[in-house]
Structure formats: C-alpha cells, structure tokens
Length: 456
Image (cartoon, rainbow, N blue to C red; front, side, top):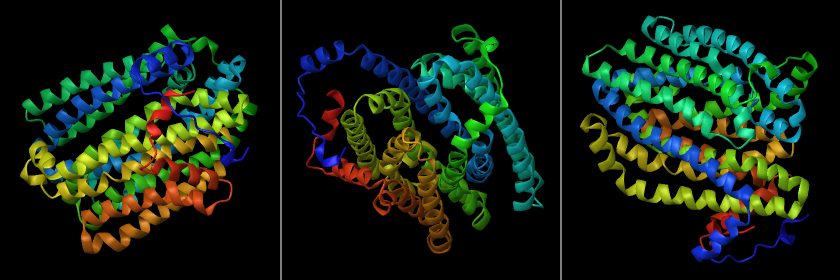
C-alpha cells in the first residue's frame, strides 16, 4: 500500500452527524470513554498537582526546589531499566494473544522486579560518581531511587490498558495522589524540612503501586492467573531490548537538561528551569492518554486493512498537531505573566524559558503518536535510532548553549532535539519516510486535519 493511494474523505462537522456516527461504533465509544478517564486523571493531577507543586516551589525556594528536581531527573534516567521497555510489548501481546495473558503478565512482572533492583543499584553508583562530596544529594537520590523497586506493579496496569479499562488504574493512582496532596499541604503548614517532601514523594509511589495491585485483584483476573517462564522472558526481552535503549535515550533528552544545568550552573538554575518545564510538560498527558486508548484499534486496523491502518495514523497525527498548537500558541504569549503569578518574582526568569520550551510539545505529541508505528511494525531498532538521534542532539546542544545562554539555551536545545527525533529522523530513513509525509500533511495549516478524527 502506497501512501498516495490512501483516500481521506471529507467530514461533516454537524454535531448530530458526529453523534450518529459514534452511536454506530461501540468500540469507538469505548475508546473515547477510556480517553476520558485517562484525561480526567491527568486533569486532576494537572490542576491539583500544579497548584500544590507551585506552593511547594514557593515554600522551598529555587535552590531547594532545584535540588529535588535534580534528584528526580537523575532517578528518571534509570526508570526504563526498571520497566525494561515492556509496556507497549506486553499490551501488544495481551491484545494479540489473550489466551497467554497470565504467562505474559507474570513473566513481565518478574523481569521488572529484577530490572528495578538493577536500576536502583545503578542510581546509587551513578550519583556517587556525579556528586562524590555531596551527601545531601546522595541521600535524596537514594530515597527517590528506591521507588524503582515498585515498577514491577505496573504490569497490572498493562492488563487494564489492553482491555481499554484504564478507569481502574485511574481510581488507584488518584487515591494515592489525593492522599499525598493532603500530606504535602500539611508539611508546608508545619514548616517541614526538604527531606520530608522527599519521603512523601516515595510514599505516594508506594501507595499507588499497592492500590493498582489491589485493583488488579478485585477488578482484574487476580494474581493466581500469573505464571513465569524463562522461554517467555527471553521472547519479551528479545522484543523489548531496543525499547530499553530507546527509553534510555528518551530519558536522556527529556531530563539531561536539568542534570547538566545542575552540574554546570547549580541547583538554583535547575529550580528556575524546572518551574517552566513543569508547566510545559504537564500537557504531555494528552498524547499519552489518547495513544494508549487508540493503540488496540490501530493494531486491529493493521490486521484488517492497510489503507485503514494508515488512515488512522494520519488522523492521529492531525489531532496531535492541532492539540499541541492549541496549547503552544497561547502559552507563548502568557508565559511571563503566568510564571510570575504562579511562582512569584523569584522564578521570573522562567517566563522566557517557558515561551521557548512549550514548542517542544508539537514534536512530543507527534513523537508519542508515531512511536506506536514502530511497535506495530516490530521495528524497535528504528525507534532506538531515532531516540538516540534526539539524545545526541540534545546533549551536544546543551554543551554548546548552556555556557552562553544558561537555562534559555537548555530550552532551545530541547526543542531542536525533539524536532530531530520526531520529524527529521523520518526523512532520513527510507522505511519511515511515509511517516514524514503524513506528519508534514498534518502540519499543513491549510488542512482541517482534526476533522478526520471523527470519520471512519
């Protein structure tokens, strides 16, 4: 199937027409419901989390806030070692081979438990090498790093994702989230020291993990379904190892800016930069929620019709571009006043950083959407190559731009790195060049791409 052979029919925007179309597609209604639950979850986190996060940032000040963000970014570099890149692989296998769900889930959980232990060890060694004389930072990183030991429980959420029933995971996560929102408020009112906020972050992770497992036992098939097999482990790792390296590359070009700022300019620079990044990255839940809900339908389309398969990808790209632009444009003009209003004058420098960094969202949205193509086509090697390109560009530009431009240079490096991975890699590779054409079509302002989402 050639890309030019695909026909994209016009769409009627009339609400009644859209509603009739939805009524005839119960699977689509299920997908939209799943998106709704994931979106509601993230909106709650975006609202409550941002407000309390801003309060914590004001309370701690740029330097201490920077230290806690430096530690979080440092730990996140190793999170993919704990998960072993198994998320999409497990979901794919649960959809395509539901009869072997227990074996897939049990083996994945055991692999992620071992991965969590390895990741925790790597965190401890790495922070000692990065800051050998800084006991405070080493202690904070060690506490946050122990959260990697809970990654094995994420296997339970994969089952709900494959069933397009993410509402149960939302319930579990929000129970932990709201509990520790209250805890953080109490800590602020009690004038608690920095270390107590670190322990609260670990406590939220632990409670969320236990809640997801409890939901799996009550609403899912339960732990008795699970089994482990070494042959299955080898199969999973064979498919996921490129995603492990790819995830490391993603973590590098998503978080290396904060780590490099901490090493080159100090924790206060990280604090100011993180204030902008938190507002910019809070929107990243949108593509993740949409793609997580649409992934089973994309897999199904691949087995049904190549034309339908690529049509769904085109509509997904269209939607990603329009949503990201709807965020980036107003945020560009509101950045300075928004930062000052939320964080105070101590963080005023973050306004310009936000105005630049927010444009990375266009490429992040497209990158999350196109990432599913690599999974469906079993081309994880290409996924690794594109994220490695993004990481290489980001590290190189940070080394060049941070000394002269400071935190603004780090924001500029992030935008360029995201565009290199999400757009220009597709142009360079023959297999992904059709994806480049589709993304360029989505970026064409003369097309009403968002309309295609509601058309089958």
